[in-house]
Length: 477
Ligand SMILES: [Fe+2]
Image (tube, rainbow, N blue to C red; front, top):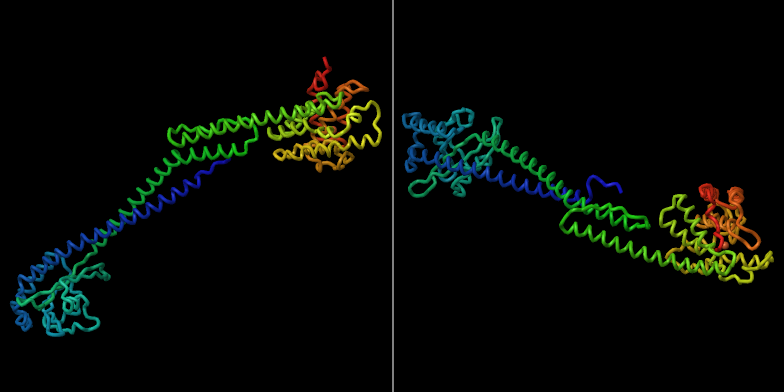
């Protein structure tokens, strides 16, 4: 049996490992990704807290009302602006702003520093810009700080210049009331790039490890387990179709584990079964031989006829390429081909001289009787075919059915040649065995008429190989 490169089990194992790898890689990826993000968030929170602390130090929340009234670029404004500028530089921010709260609904841009100059919206109102924070498009983070009292609100967003994060924190006065919000915005493009590189690294590393693991594990699994299992499977399949031919030791498993034990058990089981089959075959053959002797004993001129026909039939079958089991079946069928003669009276079988038509009709019933006798042997149904068809002739002039050519079962055509050969090479009451060349020419003459041409030619070949004419009835000593 041709062995496939990958067995079904190996394919399943590969599939399971790949699935397990995908799950494992996903877990590793998700864990790394979230841990990376959390680390960034923690760093950012700590830096924003630092920013706000720095801003708070400079601002006096209780004086917010006064600050708000100072809407001119005086020294105080310049000082605040400078402080914000320092914070921006120190923390590498995009911008920073402080919004004061106008009760109840308005915010007031108190300080605003935008080194990029891109946030044009507030540019004309560096101080004193007022806006209703309840507006639909108003900064949602600021709203949350005002309305929900969130201690820190951050969100990320993308612009053409990359990804950014903003964070906003409340500023409380001495009464614990929110009087302002400090907001800071920072580019996180570097972080996004680093995260992308990290994710790529994790995925590639995980894939390399996963592929390596799949190859190594399945390779090991294949050699260690699958190959021995396939060997055992092939061996049991081969033995399941055991046809009596000698078995080669196909299985070679040196494992000292359960698979090795299983392989040895398979061999022991095969040996035990083969032995039992051999014993049964021997008993069957010996029984058939005993029966054949009983049949031959009815006719004083056909001593050993059944055994010789069986031997010749087996030789023809083997040369025709039949396997060992078929040869054995043909041998048994040939041994019993004349068993129907049991039902023919002795006086007809042993009659000296010519048979009457009536007597000949009785003789011709022996194939039918033979089949009836052997019909009960259901384990080897072809045995009765030998008895029933061995008097059929290739041209259709035989009996009991008058079948032609390949309508006659193989077994009948083989025994017919062997039977005729033995009849000619055996002694009769009225003659000695015919000379070998006469027998040969009779067989040759019968090719395609009395005999199947293929099996007839094989018989001719056997005759030609029998230089000393040993294939004949031996004279009694
Ligand atoms: Fe016969």
